[in-house]
Length: 262
Image (cartoon, rainbow, N blue to C red; front, side, top):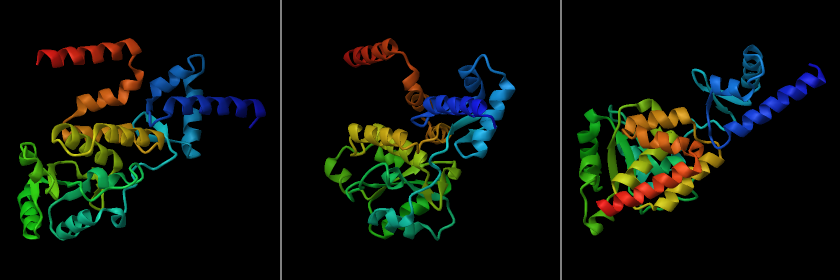
């Protein structure tokens, strides 16, 4: 390859890296638009070579992201908190689908998971009653998602060992532990819907760490949000970096106005 051609290809890669940072994904049309004066076949060839070299990855049909970290890697069992290992061991020999999610699946994005937090787990609809029974027999205080939404007694909240969330897509986990994207979505849901004791600033720091570490694929985030039923707000969160400053200012203002009218 001629030096001039190598320089052009390297320039293309650096520009692509800049647009794919913080876990961003681009579809092929967006990549073409970065070089509107270049032949689309030439751009496609460059993308193909970068995928072969392991510098970028194809995340879905026509979508690409940086390939620095395989975000499908999950937290090993030995890194789960003690209570989560107990839940895992109690359920693993039963036939229903389940996986540990939330903070336990986000090791690397959060420094330490204190034992005070309830274990979040997703169980198939058919297995929820069985899981509740098995864990209750072991002396754990376990709530289903529906009942967890209605707890107002602080002393009871502090005694909960585990919360069972509903879910249908079990391809978002490996060996009964959620992929990081699903772990974050379930944690986000528990914090924003169920008064889970993790603070909003801590939740935000985890999200920023995932962006910084390139451990967040947009396609998997969208699938996880769809499974949790919160696609609209997660899509907004993922695209927030593209929203003009004045638009964000309007949203903040409108949010404050809404609070005063409630």
